[in-house]
Image (cartoon, rainbow, N blue to C red; front, side, top):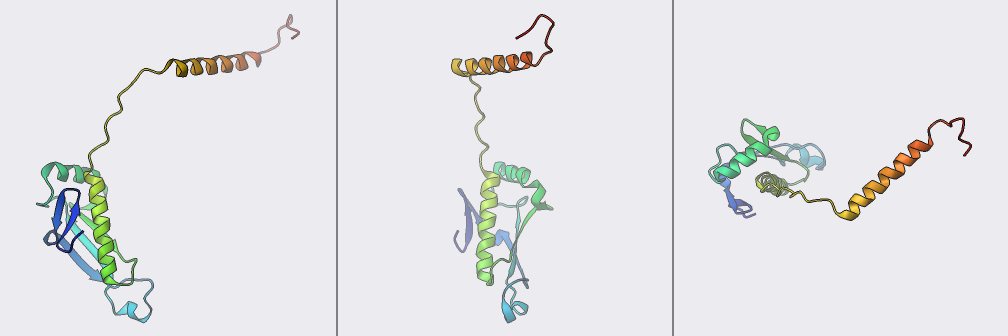
Length: 145
């Protein structure tokens, strides 16, 4: 992450595409909590971003659908006492979210035949279970065992 852009994989998101808002944060800070705008809100318009290639934009919009507000991703950071640290935290969170949202889907598992040993284990377990259930049956008149 540089000062002029956020790097996500091979994509650089320029600061010009980010919208920052600052407000007063709740929580620790002592007397300065009521005078310092340390809470950071970072807004990134995923739907209109020129930095994201079309295929990554579609993938991100699909995966982040529940977190978007009118196509925009909004990240709030207020866990630190300084605005600078909260800015860094918000940028890092944005980079992580976008990296996860634009990552390639995992390769599909290729189906294979079960091994002979696994088939034998399965059959042994089935026979044992069958025997257990058979032994629970009622005792017949001729059975004294």
